[in-house]
Length: 87
Image (tube, rainbow, N blue to C red):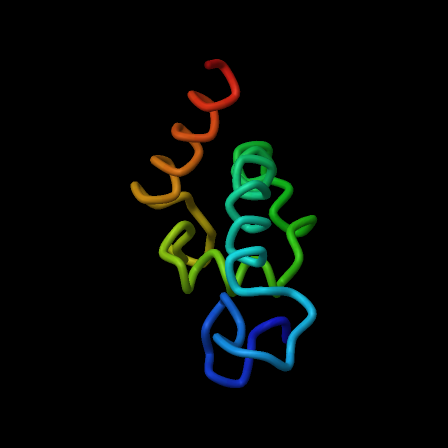
């Protein structure tokens, strides 16, 4: 599993990791629009299970009736990225 022992999708807060917590969350933030597109096109199996776990832990994706869907928070993250890319 891609999570740290403390259960945080960001990983450990200090030392012991070559990937800093902010870098992990930023990578996930940048990957979310691609994951949302895969969900939209019914290709969720192409999203890594570790990323799914982390997206759910961040409340960006949720399980609903056995399927994954983007949450309001996840939709807002995608919108913020789209605005940043345009402007």
